[in-house]
Amino acid sequence: MVNTSVKIGKLTLRNPVMTGSGTFGFGSEMSEALDLNALGACVVKSTSREPRLGNPTPRIVETSSGILNAIGLQNGGIDNFINEKLPFLREYDVPIIVNLVGYEVADYVYLAERLTEAGGVHALEINISCPNVKHGCDFAVDPKLTFELITALRKATDLTLITKLSPNVTDVVSVGRAAADAGSDALSLINTLLGTAIDIRKRKFRLANVTGGLSGPAIKPVALRMVWQVHQALPNIPLVGMGGIVTAHDAIEFLLAGATAIAVGTATFINPTAAIDVAAGIEKFLEEQGIEDVNELIGAVTR
Amino acid sequence: MPVSAQQYLVPVISNDEIIADHRVLTCYAPEVAALARPGHFLNVSVGDGYDPFLRKPFSIYTVNRERGEISMLFSIVGATTRGMAKKRAGDEIDLVGPLGGKIFQPDTREGATHVMVGGGYGVPPLVFLSKELLSAAASTNIEFIIGARHKDLLLCEAELAEAGVTARMTTEDGSHGMRGRVTDALRVVLAELGASPVTVYCCGPTPMMHAVSDLCLEVDVPCQLSVEVGMPCGMGVCMACVVDLADGRRVRCCTDGPVFAAGEVKW
Image (cartoon, rainbow over all chains, first blue to last red; front, side, top):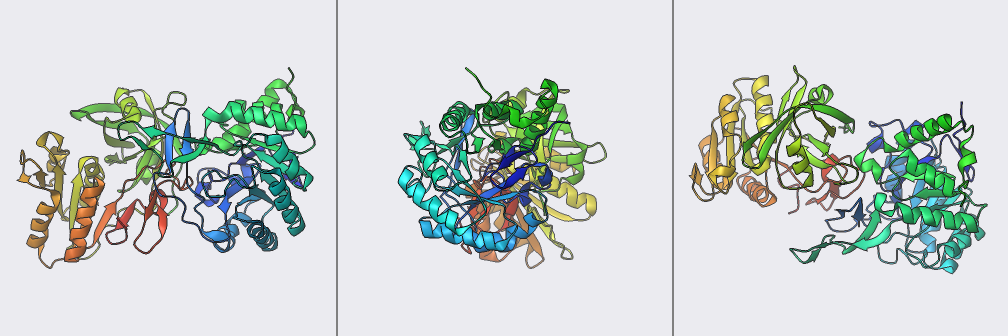
């Protein structure tokens, strides 16, 4: 019997596998396909203060080994989440992590207070880095703004805070350090990489939003490098690694690079059970390798 | 209705060309066959590695629940359909489904006539619907209108005849059946039916569905449209396949549809 459980802030996950925000709906959509209780944690779609309609279509286009998305954070707003989505999630014995998005510090604080009060939410993932909305990257590219935001959130809630970092920055470590210094319990990385694609016959951009966030196996090497970099610089803060994870092999690479947990995102679109398949694959690997505790893998890569 | 986002790797039974670049692929998928209803769709992958990366949605053409078989009628247009065209009996195909939230809701009014209006690969799900209605009650009144640009692109006429349905064909160039568009034939059919209860079920290219929808609203006949937009996940989680509704809501085609009422959709 191997130990697969890991700790992220105050949370104990039964295995290191989370879902990627925006790829798993609000859990209910996927609950027929897989047992949510078999996940390490369930991260639901970004929730904002007011409902958002998101961007025009096309919102997702296929690229080499990946997709570009420009959904634009469509969601029903916090009231809808608390009243319509959360009761379903409370029935499960799995940590529920809500991804928060706002325009300014006050929005994030409001959301954190509402979700803390609501009960049934175990951690907040702070989306400071959505590339598809105006001002979506303001916090993520500036360590000072990140520090101010996370400081305010730390005062507003005792829930575990996970700050989601953008790869679209010059120095990911400095933003991660700012979040850690401000009291973020963990960091998740990476969000999508800003990109675009063009229809050469129509001479038009393929996304209505022109640019979008690249995800899928195409970005895995970049994500893995960034996880390793941040872990080297900030070895004491737990990382949730993500970016192109499809298989247990991919996930184990992230653990070795320094991630304590990982998220399966885009892969769910192709294989509805991808997240629990990855969890089972990690366990199988531990057994095969005679490794008693998954924590032994974390950051264990050597040159 | 919850979606059934179950993944199956199932054997192909046959894969036959019916007209140029159009094929019918039949596979053995008893779980899918048991659940599939007209309006549902399947999300297919023939991906070798990560190319093509996403699944693609296909409507269901025939279902044989006794034999556990389902089929899809597809035209060869891209990487997925090229991959599907290469499948031979005994090969496996990877599908997720049946997917779809709101599907066709047959008119249950006494003596209702069900008018199917299909174009291109919008025809197969309406063939499935017609056969389901006929197997529930052999006396069901069905009118079927099929449109295409040219006679070589008309689908399913013989299959419908076998099921006892005489389809009215329209071609834009007059090469077969009535010259014109499906809406021209629909006006004739609706005039013939007069004041009796009628529901129109439509699936085809967007401009065609828009025109059929407008006509049905104009003459006040209920109309159900199976809307097609790109569906990267098909399970309601990626939020890419949104459709704007007349009431201001922006909903997912895959799980809030794909069947919408005329008047519901903002074109």
